[in-house]
Length: 117
Image (tube, rainbow, N blue to C red; front, side):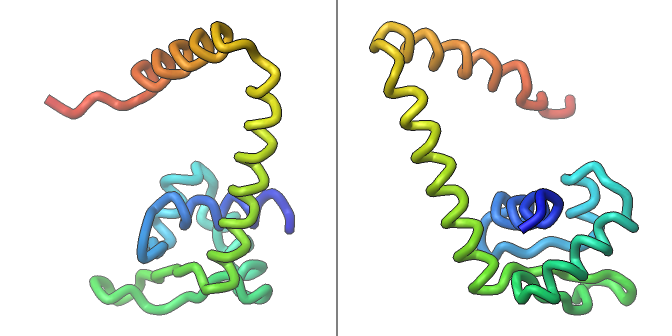
């Protein structure tokens, strides 16, 4: 699977159940053009990883959903990634893991958007 298709599937997975987004939502979350999204969708649909259907709320919108195979594939990739990350962090001492966790928590605070006031 190419990196662009993987990114598309991960975007749908991160949306949470029922793993469905409009093409506009995918484009906004992916920060790529509508044309690039269209190409990615075609590849993923041909591979049986997603389905497309008219969005119920609009006449022109398209709703994209992970298929069971697409969901299975993304879960497999995530499990492999987590296992790899575990092998990396297992090499750190307890103190290093604590420091790393603190830095990641700080980064999360910095990168989490503040609610609009």
